Length: 332
Image 1: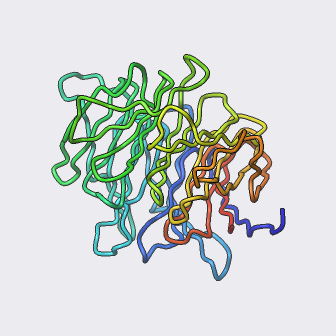
Image 2: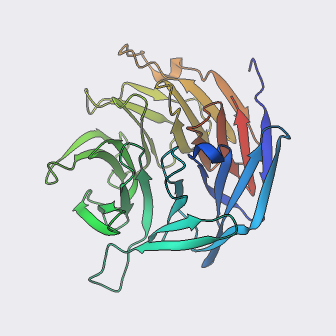
């Protein structure tokens, strides 16, 4: 690797499974981390990175208990400091929490299944800057639910797949994609809820797809990852069913992916091989003969399996990864 990125580590009190960067201009290098404890009571903690001193600070008042391990964390997706300072979490329910200087309070618990006492766990959700009023969430009960956050009410709920839905990602106002245990990537348009477009099906039959990330900087492209797969599959929604490229340089299962928020070609993937790979994805329509030809432009190795990656939208020089009890931020 030509240049070694600056690497800064925060040691949490527990194994870290979820990470999110703050989007507010006045909280540029603030992150949230969520615990992975095999018990009911888990934690979410806010930490602040100081670029001048190159260290992290935390505040014991800015830690809150979370029922079960959070499957995802996201801050309010706007730079505007006039918006409320909110973080959303998913797990048994979708929850909104309000952040104050000296405490964090539960603002809303969103239950999409009022008719029964049983609630299906929320596997993931997405909250996009182009429409911060709406959150798309997905569940093991095969549904995707669109929440209106102003009304704290379900705007629509649709059966999205034949099996559990594991991830969801907005591609534009009213348009989102999801992946499932049925091995498909589907795209939904809220103007026609009865229909979806299958844009990819896993080449390994009956193998779930676990992650989907719509490229917000270049919405023609979507990336997905299958269970126990070392490949990152990139699709062009204009040419469905056949991936434009497969990135295959991981030596173990890929666990998470993140597009660069502002550079449409760059993607970071992390996996069980303890590596974070940064790619310049060829999106010019030229199909390489094989993804084997594509090498990452940069890679970073850790001491353990990396479970999560997030790219900062406020400062795209920074990527956060999580492994063991560590949050690491990498300057790229």
